[in-house]
Image (cartoon, rainbow, N blue to C red; front, side):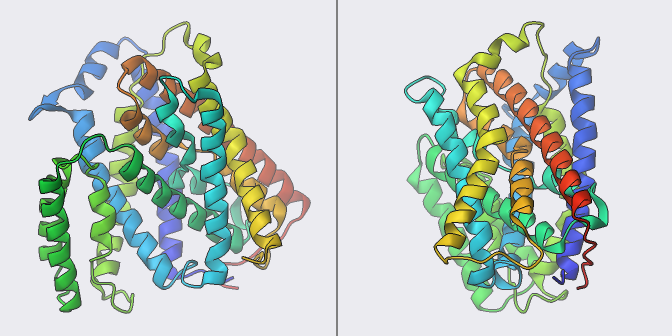
Length: 386
């Protein structure tokens, strides 16, 4: 399978970004539980214009991350793995399974309780971490597995965005929402008029973010819907969409996501943290990510192929899909993001984040060791240029 130049750049950035995420997460956990604990925690809680620094990162900077996800999704739809329904159907089916089964496991343990709102937490996959771990396996990884895992994770993130928009919106100001959508409509008209200058789109996007923030719908949704009015054209390097996507890759991978990770893993861990591991919420998150993800991905992929809805790409085996499912259990960024939206109780948020870290660590280690064994047992060096 031949990988495009854009895909390679995205894969490389996510790979490096995943390694940095791991480093800053460990550093943040260390500082939050060291002699620097008090000043470190208070720094992230510092109020700016009525909101904490962490809140500005989560609701502001993460919008840029979602903009990049939207641009990646748009490119996949027009020119990538999702441009052909036959090719797209397998990661789409896998993503559905990877969202529904973990959510089902969580609800089975938490339905009717105060924590049932956390069902969206184990539905997510962290692209950077998943790709980062996959890249550690070197050139033995088939190109088709790289594409499958990346497409799966992008669709997964889209699903998480939809879940956020539908289930984690408490009250809506229709006036502000209407203004935000009105701005989007104006940008769409600019797109149809073939205006390719990025400045009006970025200014309009900033205004749209402000009104979306005050509408009750989570402001980060702005990033995704803005991506689809940025002129795509023929998708070449000269187009507005490509230029913006290329511009955002490194700032997102090396600044925004690490900053998000640091701010949201500022967790003082008490000596009795393990006492909460038997709580339905914690169990639901861990079992959903570690067991539910691979189970759902393999199960729904199998159903799709058996029903004739999709086919297994060349060089992609069922053992690879299972391995991708295991890496899909690395929730981290999106899981933490949904946790902050799902719960108001600081204690529940802390223990949910600990559960996410445990589950993501287990999923990453198990997925890496499993794929390493499979790829060494059946070595096949598959060039990206094939």
